[in-house]
Image 1 (cartoon, rainbow, N blue to C red):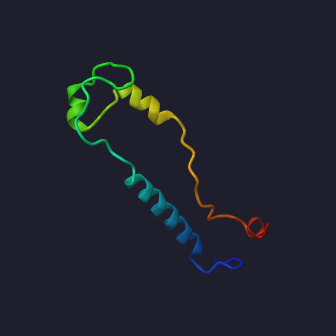
Image 2: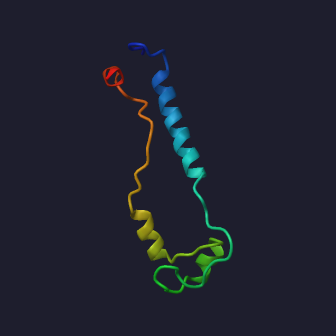
Length: 89
């Protein structure tokens, strides 16, 4: 279906581009490197040996990492689905 100025398949191209952007962002996330700590850097609780072996360079215990991951981090995105009217303003 073609509507307005969009060529056929433009909507799917927008969806694919959004997915590719998100995958690139996830791949670019920094992973811990180096020596793992034996105790959490925030709460000083011991970090289990299995966690230290599974994630080399880990600095936080599971509870502190879950708390940090649950905090919403706003990020700028590209509005590829903007209407013609919003682009003319």
